[in-house]
Length: 212
Ligand SMILES: Nc1ncnc2c1ncn2[C@@H]1O[C@H](COP(=O)(O)OP(=O)(O)O)[C@@H](O)[C@H]1O
Ligand SMILES: [Mg+2]
Image (cartoon, rainbow, N blue to C red; front, side, top):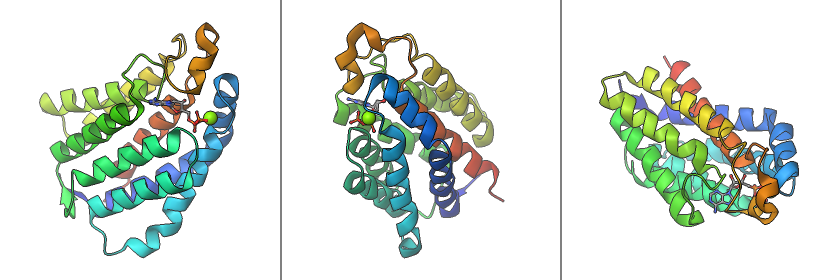
């Protein structure tokens, strides 16, 4: 199945809608172990992305994702802006010049994005960050495609792994980012960034499903 540019356009639109709808939740999670701005940051960044979409009609999938990355880097303060910005910049660079891509390209795109986050944030899974949702999610996507699943099923497994990874951040002690200042007291709370990552991946699965 070919994934056209409109899937990615829908992804950004649905992610923007979901992040706006969950702004309060993300901010509440960040209030417990950070500085209560994650929902505001994500909503601001995705509003900026959505605002510029009409000017990107001549952009291929790579260009669309790279523009999203630049919008996040330039409009969001705090850790999440540059990290998600890097995610979309790296993801976009991996599909430069493409107007449609296949399932394996999608897995590669997400893998590149996750690698970018890990490099930029100098973190690995287990540190109670967005990587705890993103990394197992991409592992699950690759595994499902490798065992012959179609892209819709593979993305459902990807989202299920992100959901589990997000919830599995609850007992973790943060060793990266603002939550790490709390040390042991960061345990017992779900990581806000892992939660926004889950929402962003769920939006991707929804974009694919709503695509004709
Ligand atoms: N070094 C890092 N690597 C990966 N993710 C990180 C890192 N530092 C923080 N994060 C993620 O960013 C989230 C916080 O984002 P946000 O509140 O927007 O920024 P800030 O912490 O600067 O206020 C955390 O919940 C965590 O998931
Ligand atoms: Mg914060």
